[in-house]
Image (cartoon, rainbow, N blue to C red):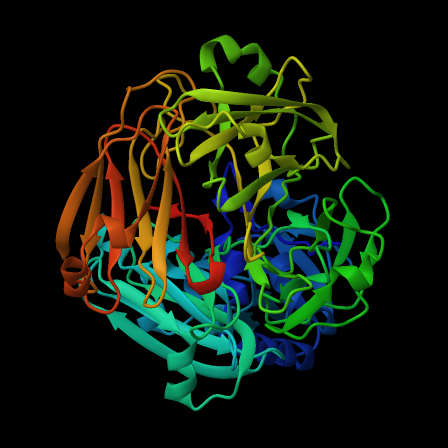
Length: 633
């Protein structure tokens, strides 16, 4: 059974009480509170904010002698907790000890003071609050901005290093200095280091490198996760970043991956089955409580049989879950469904092919179980045009093979009516492939390079996956796919996956086309491109997808910014509608301009006329490369 917690709902956003109760600094005082409650004798629980169940999911509240469960919201009277039916708080009189499950004791206690005896012993969650210097809004503790947090996969050994890159983008929304509170966890969940870094300058680079951490804190080699908590933010409560895994010059492969979704999910999908030797799922516990054996599992997409874990995973620990060991019959292009039980945020998987030095890291995505098939999407096709589009690069065919594997990403998707449209760089459609109405357990991987062979007049292009309502009508607006890119010469590869959106259409439907800020339609672009350090070159593939009709060309500006956030130089480019642009930082900006950016320059891709979608990567020696989608703000 998944944890009985509410984390994130698309209609309501994040449940901030969940983040407040699972912060790494809360675990120890929360367990101490439970020990005090257990020693205090019969205890009534008053749950004015409806968060006692979330607390009990992570801490041993079942050790207390519960004398009754009381609620403030009449709509909560149907709840059942610790063996007791919920009662109205007006019936709490006579309790000699009460746990008020609230971070705001004074307010909650004042509201029931006339119902309880003056000598009643009162406990609360107020002692679990973070220190004042870690609160962005001290007046409202359960404010999303107080818990702008995230996790990052982090590893450093003799062959592999990790670099997290972002910038002080909160300054665009009026934030002043921002402080990052960070904690690095080892593989067993042990704390390797805790520290803070302050960023005073608006839009300055933020870079955290595993090699520097090992030197600064005298650490041995490690594999674990980095917890980030941003304080002083405005506008965004999610810590967005690009994450690169790289080796020293001449060693191992490159990997790029996106920021983790900050909210744990019950299901994840889009992870490929074994490819070569194995695929490792890195399960990284996001909570201050262990994951019991049998709580997480793997299954082949579309199959009923689930192989459940046999290992307990300690708080904040990392565990390598070998797909080949658990699902021996699963082979590419089968897909794996991850039954995560809401124990961890979006995980990483590592593909371990036969050839040494060609392993790489990528991420699956959230498989939603709150969606239903939307018949309106087919009916509205005359108004919405292509509607939902999932765009991806067609890398130069002489160098790379580009593959596409549609992935069921909601439990409502019993089938997938999909087609692929291929475009050259100018926006000319050159090929089409109809998958038909794919079953949930399909193995239909499409070689986009072969499909475009002999038809592509430009050096590169892109393709789009869209719904095919002539094949079927099982569409829910959550169309996803896994894209795999393989270097034809070296055998190095990269996976990336994402979901569809509506792009560049004057009409809106159910929040689409999305906007980074404000209501839809989202008809502008601001993307972050990190610039890799030598010896790696940085490339970017920008795509201008059009759902219905829009401007014939983009009006796009590429602005090189220095480590301190200052503008160095801007270049204007145009991308044709339904076209794309593949460019390298070393070719767009000269050596002198890049040097002026200091050690960690970056590029902002800005367009106020249309919504672009972007992919970025690094290129190294001997065909090594990385690729993943970009983030914006």
